[in-house]
Amino acid sequence: MQTSPHTVPRRALPTLLAAMLLACPLAWADGSPAQAAAVRTGSSGTAVKAAAPGQPGDPNIKFVGRWDTTSSATAYTPYWAGAYYRVGFTGRTVKLKQRNTIDLWARIDNGPVRFYDDVKGTVDLTPTALSPGNHTLQVNYQVVAGSYRGDAVFQGLVLDGSATTFAPPARSRTIEFVGDSITVGTTSSQNARTAYGWLIGERLDAEHTQIAQGGACLVASADGCVGLERQFTKLDPNAATPDWNFSRYRADAVIINLGTNDVGHGVSAAQFQSGYSSLLRKVRAAYPQAWIFALETFRGRFVPQTEAAVKAAVAGGDARVSFVDTTGWLGSGDLTDAVHPNDRGHRVIADRLAPVIAARIGS
Image (cartoon, rainbow, N blue to C red):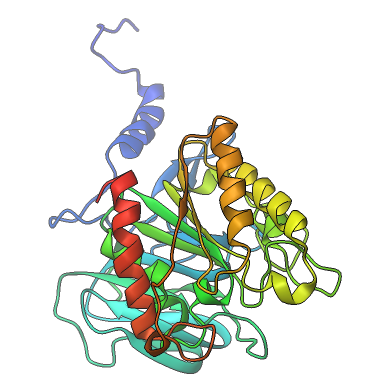
């Protein structure tokens, strides 16, 4: 059979249809994606179905921070502090499927942040139904650390029968904060969520990650202090493997706040400076274009060594790294104890630091 140049052979129709679906995903009249699972191309080039709306693997769910999304197709686990996810959804209700007991915070649209204490199973986030239309959800879990061993595992959302998900508003930048319990937000009212890193990220409309752990040092010690110079490149702060896949996201700025705990673990000045220089090199290798900010610790520990490491990096050709003098930033009324900022203290840090970051990466 002869065909004109504009006639599609019958045997080519399935292939053409698949291509059209890939190029033009189904959508509802309001512009949101249709409920049917999206079609994507697998590694072999064959069309495969993406996860159903609201389930792990749904491309409309934006997982921010270091999440293990490969060990299980049905359960995603966040590591480090401050990991969260954002998603848009339609319908009037949303529920969260949790495995075992966990504390979490959830925010729908621009409403209040709600705390859910010791919840598990199917957690109803909308006991009062929402108005019809499009909504957004942001969820983060209590930091699993010390004596608190909650089960921070995402197993999916439960939506209305006719509802679906859509991608949340995009944020063009990501800011990463590397530190210890101060960066975690320990002793603040909502931990990571009320820590200076989270506050700055939200203020600058950027995604934000807190690669931080309570009690962490810069240099790993013989008595067991977790050293972030070593663990920065890992998925899990407390495991030697696996390495984190830095292609998952790109940080536009990295803020390092380390050194407060090293004094109590026998780290010498020379060891600290060497470790800081090593961490700066690792951060630069991970994020070639990021601006790196090395904070003077708020207790003034290892300040000359921190500044010397920054100067050595600049002298070595890295023009996108700065030392940040934090002298006098915090007063006694900004602390819950001698070390940790309270909510006001974290806001003070954010007020001081956000403009410094914005001046380098844009507001």
